[in-house]
Image: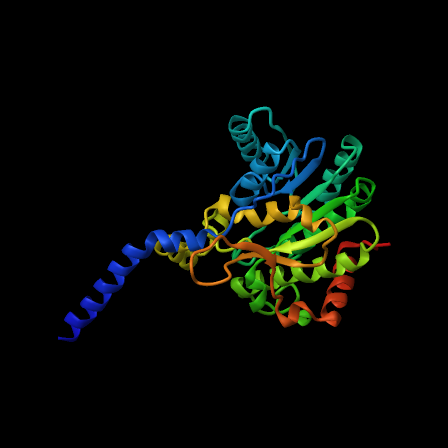
Length: 329
């Protein structure tokens, strides 16, 4: 009797999901950046743009007339993505440059060559990331997720900030995540050498993105360079490849997830929206006003209390600079 009841309930739930799937898919998709802004004559740099939301962001910005530079660890995959973008966007100005965010020497070499060859940089999108990988270290001994997601982008931004200022008005977009709510900056074991949990390490790195954005925004006041972080939403991407559990969940609940194109809309909005010209230090995401299916809006989102801590923000900034051997003006 109990088995029959369970099967009946599961059947009803399954039927409801089938009937509601179009509405669920529409809700999960979130909104679309409606800005018609052109980027002719503008230069954009996107890290990790050979796949996922980075590639979709590149496609959109290239279609607006921008010169788009894909900074990728795997140049071959980057060239494949660039070819696809040129095919999809007639006349696209897109190029690939090698950048390994897990290696300080690679970041510095990239920046040196970039500054020699590129005269302007109007939009920097810190998009690349790793998620829930086994315990690994970068070439410089940093825990991989914190090293790539936070420290690598911190150094890259530092090395290019002068060019961004000279190209102003310019924007920096930092791809973070709702996962920052579950993160804490473990100053006593920042590199997870004492204990390691791949999920918590990822959350820590995403919280670091939020804190970095807020501190940098303060330091850039008056420069006409803005910086905002974004939550792209739950996106079907290669990021979960290191986690069997997450891969299975993403497979079973695919209808609740965004496509990479849908996930890219938040980054695109923060890169081009005219109304954000002077907005800095905020965290954005697409949200629905109600559960009724309506066009969603990209608006400033709530940041977790630990992401609003002035003490944590400044302490992480100082430690990050010390680890990277840099000193901001």
